[in-house]
Length: 251
Ligand code: PGA
Image (cartoon, rainbow, N blue to C red; front, side):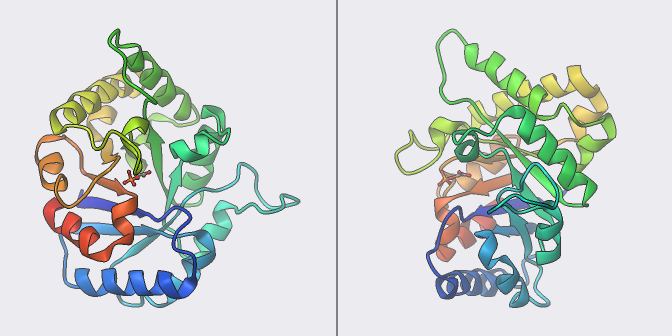
């Protein structure tokens, strides 16, 4: 697959006009770049407006979350059908910031299946909160991955993206990005878990991206040595100049 570079704007920026400015600068900077698929996941309230202004451009859109039930009395929630009708072809599911708010592996599993049925590609986030000497983070990761994908069949696996995001590497106050060789090893471990659960062929075909303090300085080395096919970028995706450099470093 082409390298996949996903922008997770989280709850930023504060206004539609700022969102349009950031989007406009990214759009201008990547025009002509064929080597990567770029996905912008803005706050959902801005999605259709940005989609409108993207006409003819190769940028894709994603939603940052959906609800576990379909239509009905669920104040404040957004369904996968709504996301699709607004223009989303990707959905971030199970981000650690949502899991911190109480989202469980069971919720994640339900959401993944729901978006797949709608023809939306789920970007499934998994990652350990911390690392320990005794390696118990490995059993944490294994169980989180298996439980999060519990609703999937073997053949669903090729339609999902797994974003490995160690929680301790996410955000401004984090320890910073993981070393490329450590990312490589962890992705290898996760593939083994997939292989034991779904089969070797399916595991080898699954696409992994990395997230957690990706910036213009570390992107090139992670793509080269980290065994991943792209990035989920938080802070740096709101800074067009940095984000464009990350895209460039990835292709
Ligand atoms: P960060 O966020 O790039 O700001 O560390 C990544 C994420 O939360 O997906």
